[in-house]
Image (cartoon, rainbow, N blue to C red; front, side):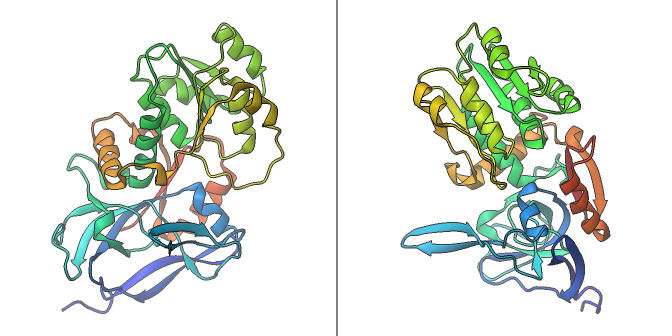
Length: 342
């Protein structure tokens, strides 16, 4: 029989704008088709910032006919648990679960990843490869990058631009560097991140604050423009840059970012003159979510995605509040942060 301490779970919840508190609750019991996971680590993601800052409410799902629709409330809700990049060990399985057993190392989406324990749906999680440490198991972003790279699908000799050299952009660089593209061009306002992009395999880097992007792209591509532009900045200014550098006629612009802050940009002229394909490559685009999670984890285990190199900040569970403050301030040297939970 478990003692009183083991019967409890600790959960980090947003209790007010920019304030997280760790609360103690009874450890949840998995229902049919669910597993209880002892969380070992959870990644920090900018998607959670609007909730942490009290600008938006939580994401919710509802059925519209036969379709499951995800939306985000405009109004914040307190208290609210967040964190969707957890990895851990199965501690208990619910009725009907046969795919997993106690002790399995698993990862997948959760609505409360910053916690000692969280409930996961068995149909939405996967086993973690034995050679991949749990603190490098960032299932959701690896799934996203896998889907983005598949959608990009550059042909031999293509010019490819990745706008934004944050964590996700750098993983995209690392994967696309394995393709026979003519040039892999990385763009970012921060020179340090452009250095990172070169380490990941970018052949050319551009800082839009220091160079005229359109002139530089014209010079690189002999006036043709890039074949594929991937905007992974989360800023409409990044999308604006993508329309300015894409080639005329059936160039591909990928938009996997979450555009959270309103900005005024004029895309109309470039879109009219160039007629690019604008491809939303958010998680819903994935042809098979679980397969892409498994593929992303496999790629990380094999070194295709150099996760360990890009985790620059680690935080204790007790310091989750500080972790989000660092995420929001985006200090020099920050690429990706994780919270480890013992």
